[in-house]
Image (cartoon, rainbow, N blue to C red; front, side, top):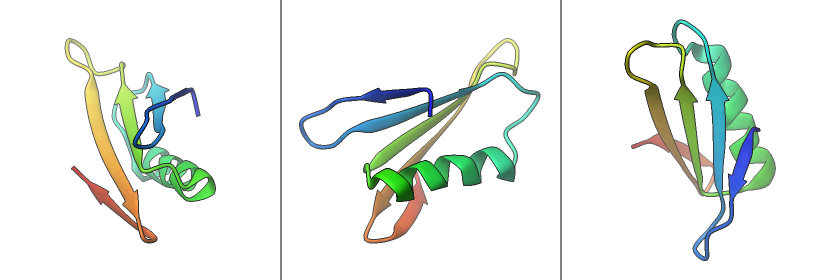
Length: 68
């Protein structure tokens, strides 16, 4: 994981990539970080999609991961 942002309601994982597109591999890596740390939120950012970054957000609660 590239960064953890400390928040009062729960820490946030930030995972940064620079690839053509986010695939299942990157998503499952981020899911592993959520499960391993039990942090509630992860943000997956891909800077390789010019001119705009691709951003995916995930919420982890009760062993369920949801995108939002």
